[in-house]
Amino acid sequence: MSAEITKAGVDLGIVTNNGDAMVAFYRDVLGFREEPQTPFPAGGVMHRLWCGESLIKVVVPDNAAPTSAEYGPPAKATGLRYWTITVSNLPEIVGQVEAAGHKIVVPPTEVRPGVTIAMVTDPDGNWVEFIAS
Image 1 (tube, one colour):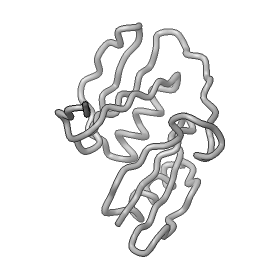
Image 2 (cartoon, rainbow, N blue to C red):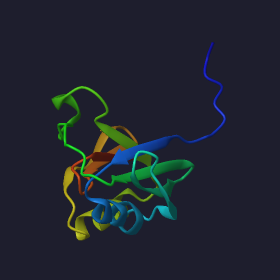
Image 3 (tube, rainbow, N blue to C red):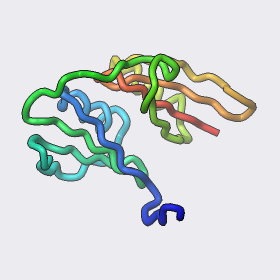
Image 4 (tube, rainbow, N blue to C red):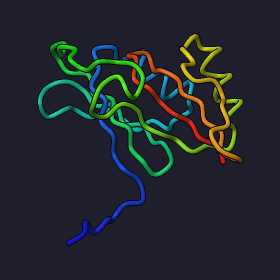
């Protein structure tokens, strides 16, 4: 039996010890719409930011979480390595990210005819891919 999807987007949870910088990146640099924060059931706070129909949940635990994920290129380790956002204004987004002092790890690159990507890192080092086609 297949999953019966009831929402067009997905929810993505990002746990961080760097809440202010992470929220500023997704809200102020990328322009995600913020909803009021909510308590996180395990202790801490959940910042809720909308990326289209997907909800990005930036979770800041009460007690600092140990860092166990290895950051870097997709082929460096297994597991969730990056996530992709489809945009119509790739050059502007990359410019905003760069102007805000964040790292561009893959500059705008045509990966096949008519499809251009760029990859950046958020303040925690998570990779975010933007694709324009």
